Image 1 (cartoon, helix red, strand yellow):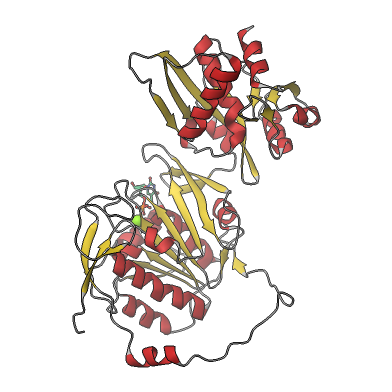
Image 2: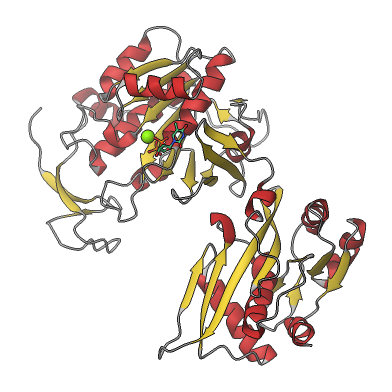
Length: 455
Ligand code: TYD
Ligand code: MG
């Protein structure tokens, strides 16, 4: 192939600049710009065809609107996150840090589908076939009729797949290891990752196979991130968790065929990933009920209620600017709750360090956590434990009013099921608490909660 002009591509965000620079002007990443050969010009026939388009039929909103056909993997925690199974002809990116368990999850999903009689091809660009086989054997999946290949050339993979019926599921582990001879850049660069993904997306759309691309994300963003692929694919799932702990959380960041707020919870065991059907019990497992500064949030992740412990530590600061450290929640939301406590309730925290953590490695995103966070903060400041049998939820407004949140019923029923007796909640949810058999502690304003805790 004739060597074309080269361009300078940021490996973090994919932005192209005209010369090498230390810092990417688009995303601000340092030392991420790499010289890459410009992509090959379109072959003559394709270039000509661009000028002479064909007429496409224009349609109306009325008419057939079929649900996208899917296959369930049979792993409920995974199917919930995808929105009910893998969609045929779609491409899904599974991102996560190395070692988090992406390959393990996909080997298990591949085996489940293959055992159900579907054709599944698993292409590993990272590990030799023997390694993948060893893993499958250790997981007790050796008998599953998955077709396995260790290959990194996109052209070889696609040629191999032409033989026989297209698979229902094609797993590519990982997109960073692939290379296509359509572009000159090295494997792992943005240009290669993008071109390889494009070829596989075309394959999915033309054959109806569901393609899953694995993408490694590193904390420092040094490797060509799968970020450039995110807008090309139909769904992006991220697999998260602390590799020091056993819980893994699967979350949809983008999903053209389903919701993005559902989570799947797994535990990494010696026998692979096990589904956690009762995450509340898991997240409350290490709870020390009498410790000041802890509260239980009756939360909701997608359609599923999840109870989780919120831990706060408020201590006098020795620093000019006190520390605000948050794990598992948004820092800006904590700042808001602190400001409301200060302005509306007279709780002075300006000279205190504040540490806040959601126990168990869960990342809570809903504003319903406000009330549980405020309760934990005040409890820590007063060094007074909260009632052991109480759960909290409610959104706090800037005026200090406690606002209603969605779906109080499932939250309260889950709390009752796990043995809680009381619920501090927004006033409109009082009835729902009674229906669930809990004592309601309606809180109209944050002020009222603080007064009650200080009494
Ligand atoms: P892996 O699926 O290879 O991660 P990724 O593909 O995301 O890089 O899993 C890596 C870790 O999981 C590895 O450190 C070992 C651990 N593991 C188990 O604890 N139990 C198991 O059954 C398997 C297969 C892996
Ligand atoms: Mg892997």
